[in-house]
Length: 315
Image 1 (cartoon, rainbow, N blue to C red):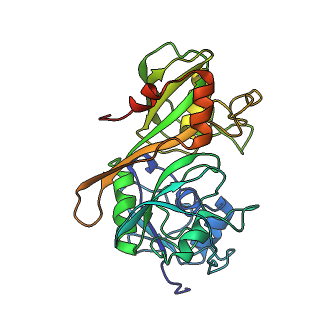
Image 2 (spheres, rainbow, N blue to C red):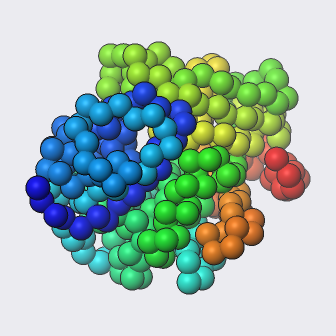
């Protein structure tokens, strides 16, 4: 049995109980299920220290470790990618990711990703394909990301994510006049039953997903909202808001309409982030202001600076 080095680790969340090992591994390693299956069969994946079959059913709470997928290059090259570092210490970075930057390499995005820039800064925490990356943002979404500088920090931050101890608050402009001033969307998300490239509440593989929202302003034709994630499914905010009938403005995938003039991407920004520091558990908090393109569009539709200020404080 191969004895490849373990370069990735994740803790199986309670809501992943009942999933096959290859399914969970594919999501955490950001690879296809076929690649995940071959990785399990190679013998380099361990569940609580033991090799398992790809069809092994997870119960929740296990620790899964794995080496880089055999189909992927073992090393990624360092590239100069602009990074706005909000905070940095010996354990982690907090980065304000600009829109247009992909977080990690994928087909069609082999270079110029956030990961390439992190490698250039000497980041090595986490597994080989996504060194340091604790969670992700879509290419068009701007805002705050946690990056682990070392392996123990990565493990502890991933565990904090799994137990929902990380608070992530976004600012989003929705199309239409959302009637509630605040509320919660509790609707499971998975791959769309027909379009596998999209996520949906109409799925044969549902995973629990909870999103909380609060209205900050109501410019004509839109609703400016603060949105807090309780879970972190792929495209969760975009899918949940579209399911309500109030999609994120400029969302070409889930919005079902052309982008309004003056908006070159979907209006979604990760504005606030708080989490237990991996060194000693103290809660640290960070904020990132709206980038100029989104702030300018908000001003054009009539949202005042006072509405932007109102998203501070507790959740």
